[in-house]
Length: 170
Image (cartoon, rainbow, N blue to C red; front, side):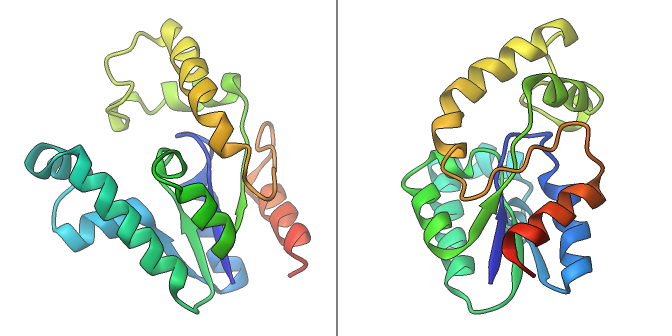
């Protein structure tokens, strides 16, 4: 079984996937870290040296390869992964997908991590909610296709993981 965590940056994909994989003894794969490892470059370096088109194609190929394996995996996806090609369809056909977070919670979480988030690093704190709202407007058509929607607002990781496990009957 493959469990894919889908959602916008700050939704908790990386944090929840680590705890969940430990709890249910599944292999953990962070898609963007895997892409970096295979290219021996950071994601920004891949964009700079090889371009966005290369990155999107490589991400798609890596996603397909991971989803085709027969291992028990918790897969943390980059926030833009479902948006390109027919990635969300492939994700849903080969895994169980989760997560949903409100704009206000995302803004609060992301504002605390601006230096780690190049996409928002230069955006004023008061403009972050509007930036997220615009992005979510574009991306929610893809995120809403996740098989299971677990709202992460005002929940600790243990509660979110419990809900995921309950949905999967593990």
